[in-house]
Length: 239
Ligand code: ATP
Image 1: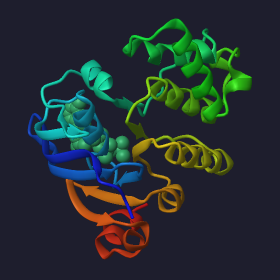
Image 2 (image 1 turned 30 degrees about the horizontal axis):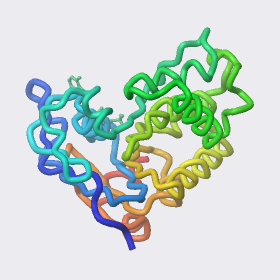
Image 3 (image 1 turned 120 degrees about the vertical axis):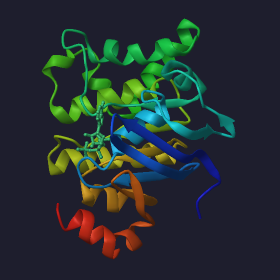
Image 4 (image 1 turned 90 degrees about the vertical axis):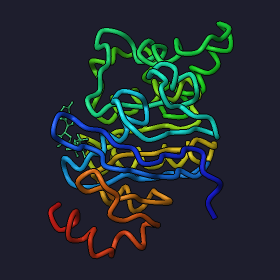
């Protein structure tokens, strides 16, 4: 059974001019779970992540561990315990993997020693220790995804928001990523992820929420979502 909700989203609505990108979106992310957010292109998945993390202006409410995040700026939400990645990965190609991950540490004041320990632990968890001194510009797409996740993870977030972590990965890389995300869940990290790779989503997630036109059309465990008529029609049918 899943734990109590750690991240609670209620009635989020985001408008861009005449477009309602997210329309009354509500979601509970149970502590210690991986929740998948799926849906067709333009359904509002990234905008939902943007609204939760404070990058998009939204009406509605978001709370983390019972504390409201409403009105907080993105960096304040990071401090409150949110970590996120972006669909377009931005790494400093000339800097090492380690230096790219260090960027994520600045969000929280820590002693130098604590920071070093956290950095080493994060690199290790994501299988990046052997690559730590390599320039990020030399990495494969799969390795770049892991570095971006490490950057979000190093600040020790309670909830990790991942935007298409398997984007651009081949099947083997996607499988490896799934294993690392399972490790994170086992270590107590709660994850909400937007992802188009259905085999990854169906095999990994505890709960899946399906968005279409900014609205939730289905929500439940993978076995329910896989066969849900509106999901097959709106998403799997068009995939
Ligand atoms: P994809 O799977 O293609 O990444 P998505 O489900 O993440 O799509 P969003 O990127 O959130 O969808 O887009 C939702 C809707 O909001 C779309 O109609 C999109 O064109 C619109 N939209 C998103 N961002 C903006 C913006 N900054 N300005 C104007 N419209 C936007």
